[in-house]
Image 1 (cartoon, rainbow, N blue to C red):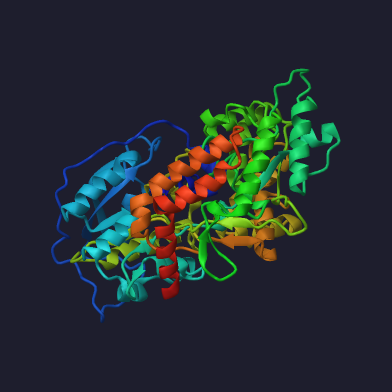
Image 2: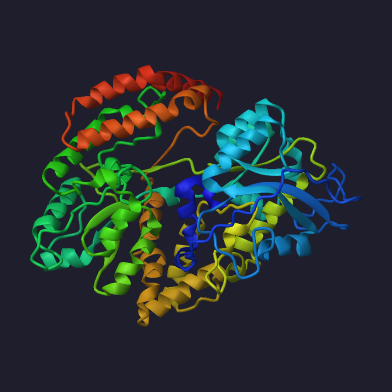
Length: 558
């Protein structure tokens, strides 16, 4: 399920953090059945305006709904289980009276291609996970059921609460001409903002303060390179980590650019109120020039252009990296390093700024996956009831995270759910509640998930180093405290565009992304900074201006 939201979302679902880290494995369920539709069970009830709307009521007699889905690489099952036989599928049948039959499954990398064939042939199951572009196409082709009244009728209180926590933008993004055609896979935009992770044991060894300005970042990086912080007498440490894609979730430069009030890959309002893309603004050029200087001075890995996030993490775990920007849960990737060297200490810091104005973290629009129901499905409300059930068992009053999130065997059972979502503030609220419980030594008000974080932090403080990541995320000085600070102080910049992909995006986005990555990489690796101005012109000519016009036309309708 998480893979349908892309890498950012897949790893964001490690929001059960240290537990999910236990769910290793390298197995892949590739079971695929023939694409033959299956009719609902005979006599099964259909939704109607007068039907009692029990959000979690069971069908009697039971019904069958068809679906398709991707299978995440490395998905691990308990012995004897599979995607159509697991804790979720059994609960759907026993508690909702819904048997889910998969018409087909496929590895995540092949999902969009296979689904596009189904869309072209108008051969959809009852419930389908789609991306924004596919949603738009299906709406235009009149292949989807209007869920507007059904959502109002069957959506549970918890579902509607979670779906509305982003101010309504998620639901708006699934609404066309006033009609709701999809259920967003709700996620946290603020959970995808950056913090600066720093080796504070290195700071202490070299007598350095925690960096608060961009000059501090540069000077700290220089000291980490020249000051032999690992004490081995060799020049083998890097100051600031950067991955080959430049942007993303780990060792990415989003937060670095934000320190110069630049917001690449984000739509922001200019002085006139028009939407412009942050990638082509002057502040982005300023940040690129500083990265170029750092690269020239040896503060970045000279071979960063060939190293993905996992390779950078290996350097961090090996004790060769002193700082990187990334998501609040990235510390989970440093647990192996901490286990090997308990003296290693990473601390999350708010984004340093280039001037007197506080840095603001860019917040992406977090919805990348939607769940749709094919037009004419016999029980279209079943999708809503399944979503109600999934959210309740994951985050509701009767949640069982040790069963439905990550089980006692370390299996990431959350990935088996047909529909998924989480409240944008779930982890921030969990942090606040856990800190309060730690201060009062009273965990009784915590829900099951929060109690797990509480217990793990207590275990860490009692000497269990393997629970260190919980303290670094949910503890008083954890990364979620940094994100809470952004929220409390208004130091956030939301992506101002949350509509479906425009025609210009469909036609030109891949070309523009390739142009940006190639240009930015060359500039950082000592290319001419004047290439940025050429990039801005090319970006506009190769479809950027068309997209900008479309985005502003959309804004006018909001």
